[in-house]
Amino acid sequence: MEQVVYGDVYLAINFTMDWLALYLTAKAVKLPVRPLRVSLAAALGAGYALASLLLPDGNILSTFTALAVPFLLMLVAFGRPREWRELLRPLIAFWAISFLLGGAATAVSYLVARWAEREAVIGGQVETLPADLPFWGLLLLALMVGAVVSLLLRVRKKLPKTVTVEVGESADALIALSGLVDSGNLLVEPLSGHSVILVDRSVAAFLPAELAFLRDGSAPSLTPRLRLIPYSTAAGEGILYGYLPKVVRVGGKVRAACVAVAPLPEGEHKADAIVPATLI
Image (cartoon, rainbow, N blue to C red):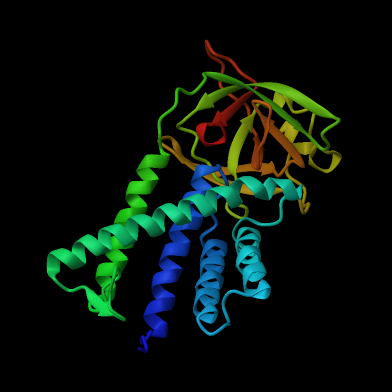
């Protein structure tokens, strides 16, 4: 018995689920979410899912392709890592979240179909994804499942008040700074999507030569490494100057982060840097 598959609906469902899985993967392993790149990766995954319906199943080529596609999605969504082994954590998280999303969506969809008495019988078996459930229902279902999984991933942990930040141009020449963890630091560098660590000018000896002007607050010079970071506070809006260091470690763990140099306020808990909680 033939089963009719509507390509547009199939693409839309797979795109939505892949987008959710990639988004939750980024949140789970603390990677920056770049909507355009995540959307491109999700579209690639949805295209592969549709193409796989036309390809022969059960041979070595199909197995190799199925294993290679998630690697490609990680590269498209999150970029090439400094070391290839850094792909392992997001890849494992993506697989686990995909299985969780797929299983949860299938289970909830089956319950909805039974409740509405709309399950589709194909080849003598009850399909868990009902054929007559409207697409908007499937989309809403996917978003609900994604919201639940996102809440499960946000298991609150006790954040440290301070953390050691290491910054430099190579792993062998890092300068250690005392960082104050601040959940209110929501600054993001627009181009890369990286969270921003604020560093006091007085300890910015790690700056490369072409960015040394940031240390004394003089007028910025044009350089490819310079980044403009808009900010908004109760006192007004402005622009911070920063750059993307080649190596950043927070609490001993390598992180992708932008560093902005500015005079930090004096206070009881004076620190060299203010670190966003998303990097912990």
